Image 1 (tube, rainbow, N blue to C red):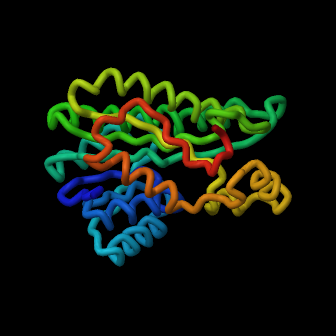
Image 2 (cartoon, rainbow, N blue to C red):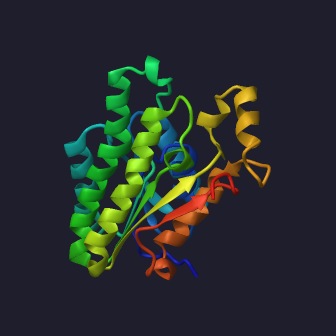
Amino acid sequence: MFDLSGKVALVTGGSRGIGRATCVALAARGAHVIVGYVQGEAQASETLAKLVEAGGKGETLRIDAAQFAQSEEAVLQVAKLHGRLDILVVSAGISLDALLIRMKEEDLDRTLAVNLKGAIAAAKGAVKTMVKQRKGRVIFISSVIGEGGNPGQTAYAASKAALLGVTKSLAKEYAARNVTINAITPGYVRTDMTQALSEEQRTAMLANVPMGRPAEAEDVAAAVVFLASDEAGYITGQALRVNGGMYV
């Protein structure tokens, strides 16, 4: 079950956090994994080493999600190099938080460029290949913030909520070609990003999680593996909530 042997997978934002855990999980199931990164080349290499330790194989690739054309072209080059692309996981993302009255236009623009436009560009490149194959999986990593909102995260919430609309639209466009498009909306996940928050902020977040603990990146990665598998072939246009009951 959930065998990904022979599949080619590309994970953007694969150098750390959820992206890293996803790369390792996909590789452990047999996929050849391309670890996408933009600045953390050393971290991407660490991810590659971890997935090799898990018995997998792969490579690293620089993808700048903030550059629409470059992002699309990088995905197309992966398909050209390997002769196929079966799985795209869009995990690259940033959060430039501020209350609305203090938010800078350039921060809003960059957040949307990376989290939304970059995701659409990558999906565009993937779908071009997957339609020809008449099979493929695109999985966006959205967020519980895109569903429930959060003070000080207007730009981030807007970008992640928009991904859910993208998911539904693309699912309807390509379902007939056996290309599924889904999203995952993680809640409070123990990553470098959340660990950088103050103890007070982390305690407040945890108080809203009925399960009483943050998710590990591996919890989200397990959901990705499921949606990427043949067993999830009749699921499309959905947002899978991995949030411990934080938002239902």
